[in-house]
Image (cartoon, rainbow, N blue to C red; front, side, top):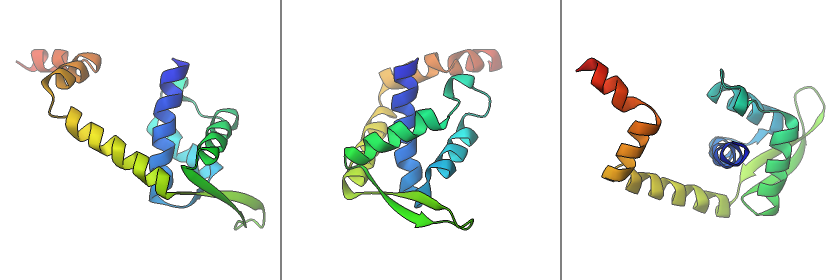
Length: 121
């Protein structure tokens, strides 16, 4: 489960940062909104900050130290051109997948949507 959650969280973080320049705690709060009831996805600083450092080392995001509204020094993250390219590739893959019958069957099966449809019929 660890590898799935890290990869999934990695992509969500990149997407969140693409929407606004944001600090690590802000990212954690937004991720918590995605995974309100799932303990496997519970985000802590020990999970998020290593991902942010790795993404920064890989050139997907950049960090800049600023003084926040509470007069504390905080690192804010923004997406780089390479990060935008990665998001574009992810979007392209999703667009290809959403029309692929095998992918649709997989998503329906893995999310139990096929059972929902059967119950409605």
